[in-house]
Amino acid sequence: MSVKILEINQLRFTYDPQKPYLLNIPSFIINQGERVFLYGPSGTGKSTLLNLIAGVLKPSEGQILFNQQDFSSLSPAKRDRIRGEKMGYIFQSFNLIPYLSAFENILLPTKLYAKGVAASVYQNEAKLLLEKLNLNSVKDQRASSLSIGQQQRVAQARALLTSPMLLIADEPTSSLDSDNTNEFMNILCETAEKKKMTLLFVSHDKRLETYFDRSVDLKSLNQAVQS
Image (cartoon, rainbow, N blue to C red; front, side, top):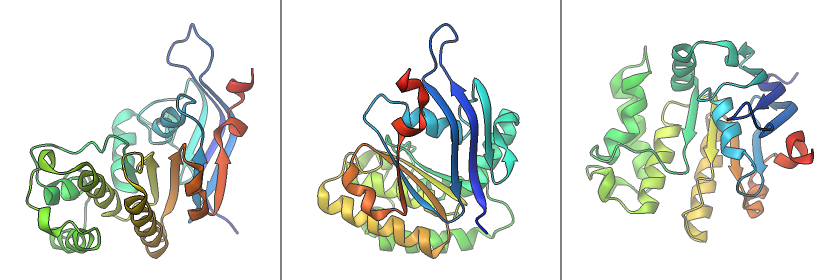
């Protein structure tokens, strides 16, 4: 029997109550362990939907259930805690702390949220990720001095470090060439499978959908764009 990790019911969202809804999604379900590719052109609300799922934004109407809990009804502090402990997020803009080293950026979520696990466990895991992602040579360099590709891989390692239940990736390959994109995708999918993580990956590049169990067109979910 499939276990739902994410369930959206009658979700509607607008940044401005005086304007039409940007998103109107009657239903969307992701089961535990699935790798889902969500695609659509720029400006169709992909990043907004991810921010709603992650609890950064609250729905104007409707319900978002994460791990069978009504995530959208929780306080901001509780959403922050769940997001930090049970979700990984690879941002399009990476969101690294520029004055911290690559290694420190990777470990940052464990300083903020992780409890009950020895620091040495995360440090060892971070070292393995540095090696796998070919970042050993820059692990002590500040994030601001890294190349775009290196910053991208640091962001990937940071999101994978705590083995989150749900890993969200927002256009993470947009700044990578084809070789680095393929390497990134292979590592991402291999790690997700090994650690039994659920993956929600958003992109406008349909060539990437072959890496996933299921491909979903945002237009097919979002009734707002059909009105």
